[in-house]
Length: 68
Image 1 (cartoon, helix red, strand yellow):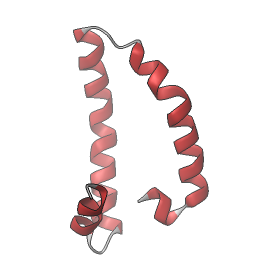
Image 2 (image 1 turned 180 degrees about the vertical axis):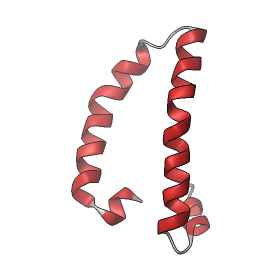
Image 3 (image 1 turned 30 degrees about the horizontal axis):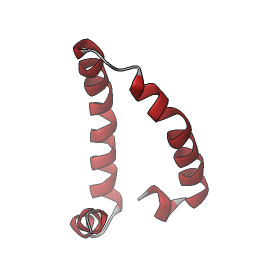
Image 4 (image 1 turned 45 degrees about the vertical axis):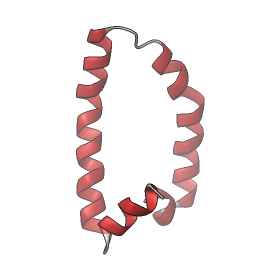
């Protein structure tokens, strides 16, 4: 969705994700760490879902395209 609306911002986000998230994920190796990560990521998931359904005319189609 971000790639469709703003390819430049998507590129910045993707580069940072590729650069930092794997190394960060290697440090989450306890039940507490994984629970905290889940709790911190839940608001981001909700923001994404709200924006998907507000900005896309066919959000279900966009979702199904991701799994092809």
